[in-house]
Length: 336
Ligand SMILES: Cc1cc2nc3c(=O)[nH]c(=O)nc-3n(C[C@H](O)[C@H](O)[C@H](O)COP(=O)(O)OP(=O)(O)OC[C@H]3O[C@@H](n4cnc5c(N)ncnc54)[C@H](O)[C@@H]3O)c2cc1C
Image 1 (spheres, protein in one colour):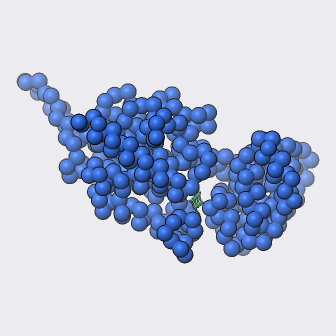
Image 2 (cartoon, helix red, strand yellow):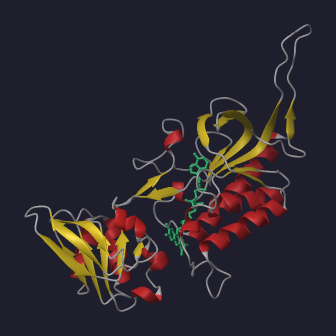
């Protein structure tokens, strides 16, 4: 059930006289925000302060991706860094203080051809004048149990976020992947690690020529060809000490010692619901038309689900602010 907001727009049904079966009256939201990460909660803060009483639907990960990390050192305003979970809790409180309603619920389907827009949220219809999509992008996992157990204990999915942490300094590191992101992460990590092993399952990099050449020319990067990670070591010690690799051609196994495993095998934007309706690129990242507006009037986008380049907390928050302002202006123009 969607809890109606105090002051939310009320959509009055036009019942013909004599109708015996009463129709359900439904509230129409002004702004629904799909996602409660940095983008969604910043959009909530701005639209709440504009008195629009936004409804934030958290999805299965309230607070978004940042809740999975212990220390965030590059979000401005926290000179000592801040726990990701705590940061997101504070963002939510800040938005709620101005009237945002945060609900643990998932958008399951959308009908964006109708006016108002209609969302199916945990089986219930929700009508809204505007929608801000802030559903993020999930990182691809290798899929190993040991990888999962050692996440945040040396296994990470973001070199820009975690590379500078003390645990990785002057230590051997492993990057898994062979695309542009893997090359970029490997080059970035050469600033911190003693050596960076770039583990790729083929014998050439999939990255663009210029990125591949740059990475391979770096003396601190050692390619490990034709290899896949079969185990991250050492679950018993509860920290990363190395990786077990298998050569896909010879099936020979070997262990490389390392303090960190940076998995860079791609992201999957959480935009499948909008396929065929909202314009997106071949990887599923939404392509905004003007500012944060999508090709569907009243639908805006913010954060990692529309950003294949930066994918940072602060950029997601910035785009959340922009989407809120765009939605607010859209509503103001309609009500003039
Ligand atoms: C381990 C780790 C550490 C990181 N560390 C840093 C760091 O130190 N600094 C930094 O700047 N960045 C860091 N990042 C990146 C940062 O977390 C992301 O850039 C940021 O979270 C993106 O915010 P977002 O709001 O776009 O998406 P997300 O945070 O991914 O949030 C997406 C939201 O959408 C919701 N959702 C998805 N589908 C639905 C649906 N169908 N219905 C309703 N809701 C839905 C999810 O539940 C979630 O709440 C890190 C990422 C990871 C994984």
